Image (spheres, rainbow, N blue to C red):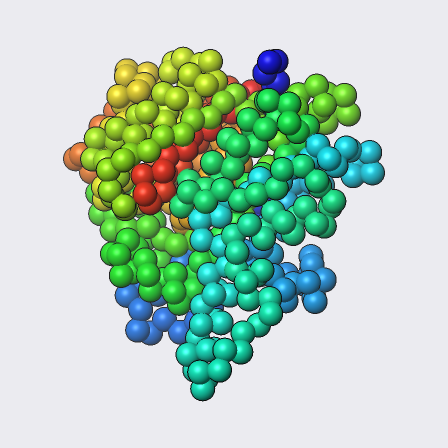
Length: 415
């Protein structure tokens, strides 16, 4: 079977530091923090009172008011990012074969706000089960790609990947394989999440996973810093149009980068903690390089998972040193979560977009908020601290890992 080449022809982003792809990129290279006190609910009794919310977003500017009411926020975010990516790709929806256009999406949680509200409404009532008829279709994680498919009439494969925080990177790899193997010509892929809710914040606080740096939220997400104390919860969506190379060429599409390959692995270690030596992470990066037919020394840039947790950051950097050896010191390593916070199931998508834009613009966004050296981290690694760095990025890797030991990695290269 012929293995087809796959390229990226459209991007869309809705993030805590920018509500479009271009705004997001400007936020990244300027080192903008998206963290601020939570506005969605009263946080007085919460351990953590801040998050990286999407700002100045009104769904009805993009989606019919009646339809918007039937969507959880995570699905609204998905629709907006996907529409931007479709427009960016300049897909002629009257000419494309919609039987060969798929939507493969990632969400680690899905409609958490909808679930929370319906349960609270029931708990506050008289015990009569009066639930909104849209409760289930608003909540389920697969409804985001379903809504994208319904709006545009895309009749190819349509589903959601759920692998916690690796979900949207997992979706991108699935989309890559769908096109590589000839099942589709185009796939709308990416991920969305909207977990800045009472349940989301309370649940992650109970796990001691979140930073509690309430006095200075803008500096709380500090990957690789010696004083990091947990991640900052974020929300939003990222969308990519993946397209078979000859299909893209035939219609004269702009090509951002080639999707060189991807990899998956499992830590097989713990429900929430990473393996301290990063063994699963080593395997996923090796798998990704092999799948792409590339060597470690080909990689110029790695956008790490880098959540700002004490254990996870060290384990990932140890794994990078094992896989890349001496070449690790030549790689621009960064964590854009220092600016966006952790978008859970949408993290892989927005970080893939950041990696692709680094290839396009020749700039690697910074890891902001670094003030204190961590003695457990190799000081010779270039972590792109506090300021963007110019770099001719020919190959960029994006790492994403999730609770349960799910690891996903995707590689992009200049074309």
